[in-house]
Image (cartoon, rainbow, N blue to C red):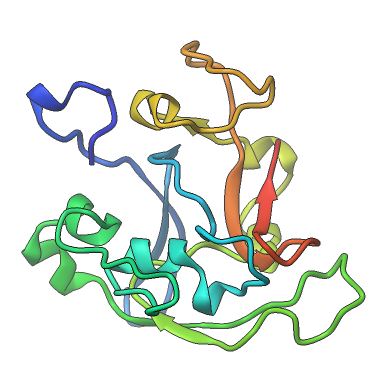
Length: 182
């Protein structure tokens, strides 16, 4: 995936962190870096993971006619980041809809989905990352140049600047997902 901000030298290999391995040998992985900046949803409507544009962008799905976006080949994550042979190895997963534990509203998470690529939930982050220090995320130069948000709210090209990262768990305002800010 493009990471260094120089498209003339081609895409760079993604460094993956293995979070889990099941009995069938299938891996749950997350990229070591924040690779890109995408809005959770392009409209400010009440939204769940199921209907979010980030889900559509990650998997190369077409969005609803209301949002009117077609994430065509190479304008979506799965096609831009993986070769056809690699995509054939990615297993479609049942993705549960976890409510936000800090929110008193129930059933706000929407419905479970089946996806090839998905964001983690708060529950999964707390399961796979031991503490806040292990949850710190650093963006690639490409992500920085594409408006990644930083803890100091300005563009930071220093490699030590961390950034927010989206989760599929609903945020408190219902127009976005939850994001980690460590």
